[in-house]
Image (cartoon, rainbow, N blue to C red):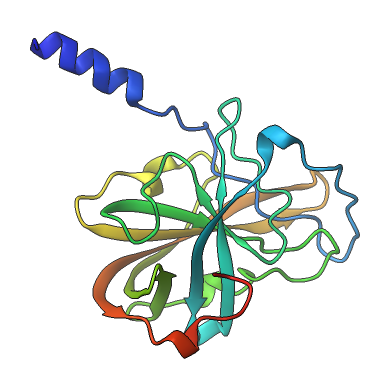
Length: 199
């Protein structure tokens, strides 16, 4: 096979990412009515769950499809969403996982305190009988169009994303919080640690 043919195959397999990071919040203290989730945007169960011990967060991770060059995370609720096109959580590469800062009911979401994570804090992915422990290396506030947080990594990295700075006049969030963590250990999962409903 020629080099040009290999390049063409790689190019055809490359997934185009949206021009902005996902919108992961609704208006605070206001109930937002969601339409029914379309079949094309249904989330897929992964059997994987996320734990952020310092925030008291435990939640299942679902797969968010890339539909028409957009990740629609509107229906996540109290789940985390793995963004299709990034590495699967626990695999080598950069896995992007998002969660709501504010839920549709106007209350704080599971990622509301994501910005308080600091260097060295642990983020844990429980996947298929193993515990993947990541350690925070970076916590920054970025513009919605700053896709550098999704950059490819050779090792296993986890990037957690949520919204920040709600503007009532425009009904939008001005920024995103991006927390990047690197894999530091993998251990066998004690069965008693697996919460019911996330297998």
